[in-house]
Image 1 (cartoon, rainbow, N blue to C red):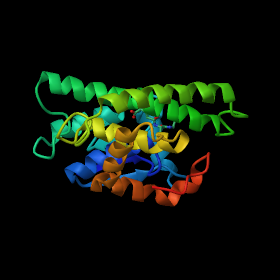
Image 2: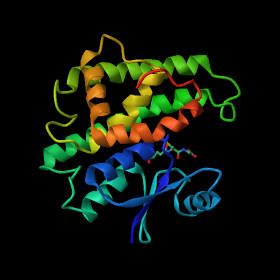
Image 3: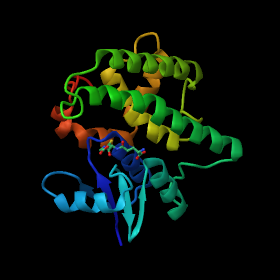
Image 4: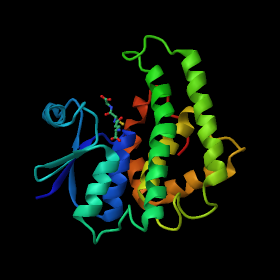
Length: 220
Ligand SMILES: N[C@@H](CCC(=O)N[C@@H](CS)C(=O)NCC(=O)O)C(=O)O
């Protein structure tokens, strides 16, 4: 039975799971959560703990949380481009970077976006936005100092950490541009965007750019 991924092509965490599926070249059907398919939203509401996506349904085995979906794919398809592999230290580094990108890059980015969504916030809280941008500056500086000059976040192999990095840095740069002070980080983001699995996720989201509450920048 083909796997089904519930999500949306413009959603950052959906990208994270999509990138893993593309890397592994696994067949799946994409249940896009939109007004045309209320039944997908109903299923998500019934099975996802708090209704967040992505959600993967593999013949009745259901997982949410993008990192867990990727870990499941690694276990279920060990012959397909592992994304969480190596010795104990390598595994810790991959998982550490995954948490870093989700919590400290995607977290502030999502909050800045949320401040511009009228049904979530009547008006953007400018003080909150300043704080979130300061948080992004902090993690940009850390990444600039710690990312390798070449290759991927955790070394030579493309991993879970890069699946997390791609959507988080893609959208973070839209809400708080990575400046010339962070050339290594900017180069890593560019390397990510030129990876075929990631380019595919970016292209799949293009028709939805008008939905970006701050106005999508004319780049990428
Ligand atoms: N920790 C979750 C975060 C997922 C998440 O924030 N998904 C967003 C879309 S990118 C979502 O479900 N938004 C709708 C909502 O919060 O109700 C994961 O890693 O999958």
